[in-house]
Structures are given as C-alpha cells and as structure tokens.
Amino acid sequence: MRVAAVGAAAWAVALIVLLLVGLPRPDRWWVWVCLTGIAIGLFGVWYIPRLQRSRAELLASHTAQHGAVPGPQPGQEPRQEHGQEPAPGDAAKDAGHRTG
Image: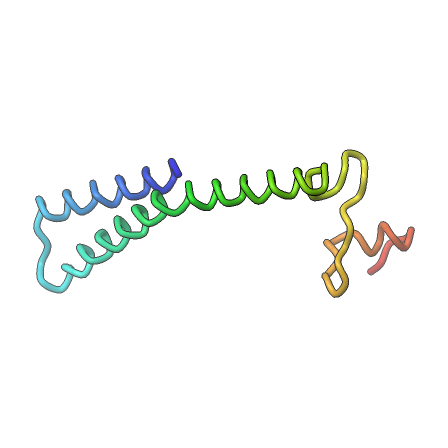
C-alpha cells in the first residue's frame, strides 16, 4: 500500500509543478497523465488492504480446515500441476543430464 500512496503523491507533486509552471496548449495532455496517475494510486491505496485482508482470511480458513499452510513443506520440492510449463533448468535436473 505504501508504494501506491507514494506513487499517488509523486503524481500529485508532478501535477502541482505542471500547474505552477504552465504548459503550452499542445503539452496539456500531461495534466491528464498526472490525474490518471493520482487516480490509479488512490485506487491502489483503497484496494491493496482489501486484497491483503482477503488473502489472510483465505489462508486462515485453509489452515483451520486442513491444519497446514498451502504450498510445499520445508525441504519439499513444489509440485508441478498438470499442463504447467517446467521452470527453466527443471527438465535438465529431472533428466539428470544437460539438454541443449
């Protein structure tokens, strides 16, 4: 959330500077860029805490139901889902030799 707030503040500063300096008519679109940046930053400030809260509730619910945190356990390799591309280097590691 801090990144979104800092971004919105930076766009607000840019907008103030542009308004104080004044822009020629062809360059006034920069004002809209700043306003859009502020709007997106404010949306992030509003949305990110809700997203984090939702994820924390989902994790707590999963932990309460299954007694464990989802994902690989310490020392265990992550499972690869069916149809998922292997990460670079996994095929060579699994095959036991270099591919090229």
